[in-house]
Each structure stands twice: as C-alpha cells, then as structure tokens.
Length: 243
Ligand code: BV8
Ligand code: ZN
Image 1: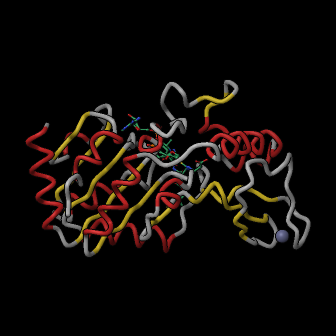
Image 2: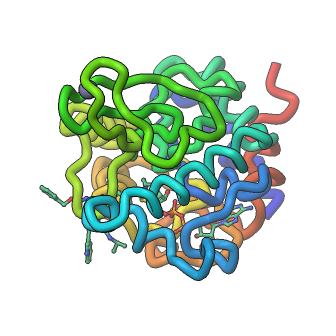
C-alpha cells in the first residue's frame, strides 16, 4: 500500500483537475453513523425507510424526530483528518471539485470551498409551501417546525429516496467527473444512484480512479487503486509533507 500511496501522491501533485466523491464513511471517524453500517439504525428504524417523502407525509413527527436526533448528535461532532486533508488538497490543485453525498455539513466546517452537496444539507430547512430555504443550525428544530413567512410545515432540505437531485448541481458534478484526471472515491458503498454513477463517468472519461474504503465495494473492480483502510488514516497520507 505504501508504494501505491507514493505513486498516487505524485500523480495528485502533477494533476490540474481532480474530483473527489465522499460518502458517509468519511464522517464515520467523526462519530456520524453511516447509513448501511451496523450503526445505521435509529430506534430500530433503517435510515433509508425514514429518508423518504412517503415517511414524511405519513408521520412528519417521527421523521422530524429522526432528523432532530441527527442534528443534535452531529452538532456535537467535528470534522476529522480526512476532511481537513481534502481542504489542503483543494489549495494545491488548480481545478478541484468536491462532491459529497453527505448532508452533515462537515466539509463546509472543515473549510472546503468548491463543494457540491448533491443530497442537500441537514442544516438547511425548506418550507413545503413557499419553498423558502433557511439555514438553521439549531440542534433541535422542535416537533413540527413551521415557516415564519407562511406558517406551513418545514422539511429538511435534503434529497430523500425517490426524489430527484437538483439537476444543475448534478450536471456540475457529472462535468467535473468527466473532465478530471484523477478522482478519489472515499467512504461510499457505491449503492445509491445517481451518485454512484459518477465514478464510472470519471473512469470512462479516462481518469485515474482511486477508492478509499474499509471494505471492497461493487466498484472496486474498475478502480486503478483500492486502499483498504480508514479515510482518516489514508487521505492525510496522500497530501502529507506537501509544501
Ligand atoms: C432518484 C439524504 C429518482 C437524506 C440520501 C433500485 C435500484 C437502483 C436504484 C434505486 C432502486 N430503487 C430506488 C432507487 C433509486 C434510489 C437508490 O439509489 N436507492 C438505493 C438504496 C438502491 N435513489 C434515489 O432515490 C435518488 N433519487 O433516484 O430519483 C427520480 C428520477 C427522476 C425523477 C424523480 C425521481 C435519491 C438518492 C438520495 C437519497 N438521500 N441522503 C439523508 O441523509 O437524510 S442518500 C444516503 O445514502 C446518504 O446521502 C448517504 O451518503 C448515501 C449513500 O450512502 P453512503 O454514503 O455510501 O453510506 P453507506 O452507509 O451506504 O456506506 C458507507 C461506506 O463507508 C461503506 O462502504 C463503508 O465500508 C465505508 N466506511 C465506513 N467507515 C469508513 C468507511 N470508509 C473509510 N473510512 C471509514 N472510517
Ligand atoms: Zn413558507
């Protein structure tokens, strides 16, 4: 692995255009539960069953309880060495795009700038009626928060299963993956679409693609590099002793 890290590090140093895709695994060492890992449960519910418009229509109180639980938990956590290493990488690469499936806001807090949050952001809420989007970082939004403008129910401004992603954001992510010379894919199980198709876009665009994950994924077979280990240990080594 060490030789591979040194080789990839040299390639990153020489690259003009780099794209990075992160999933829940990059925040695991910060203490944020992943979706599909052993910690992916909440009160015996699976996150994927609560992160849907149907669940919200059926029981908005339960879904808000789930999101308030995540807000309260994540508000006590902070970014880790992997998030910080990507901020350093961004300062060194002429054209750098960070694409994240995560809604925890830890990349923003670490200082990433060119960031595409393709599944939205837990710290934003949206009014069901007037569509007003508000940044609200309070750990607990209350049982059924309502819009100050029109009094309607608010929802987390995240993309739920069955909902389409913001097309402009997705197009920018697609373009960055098609154009890049190197793509790092960090801490994602490569199951959720269309996010998982972005690594294929990079590969088909001729990029060198590297996966960093504690386990193999359905995409490992087409990776140029597969680093089996923790993001918090491997990502900083890719940018260490860079001047
Ligand atoms: C859409 C926001 C349609 C909410 C999220 C059947 C087949 C194929 C697709 C589908 C299907 N049925 C339905 C679909 C589509 C569906 C989908 O992909 N479902 C999956 C479950 C099969 N997709 C959608 O619904 C998307 N929309 O398709 O729209 C459409 C089209 C046109 C018009 C109208 C509609 C919307 C998907 C977005 C859902 N929202 N999040 C919230 O967070 O509350 S997705 C959610 O899962 C999170 O964003 C999360 O990031 C994402 C993906 O999971 P991962 O990030 O990969 O996390 P996971 O836990 O799975 O894995 C963690 C990984 O990290 C593991 O590999 C682990 O080994 C690794 N790891 C752990 N620790 C570490 C580590 N790695 C390194 N270091 C460590 N320390
Ligand atoms: Zn409103």
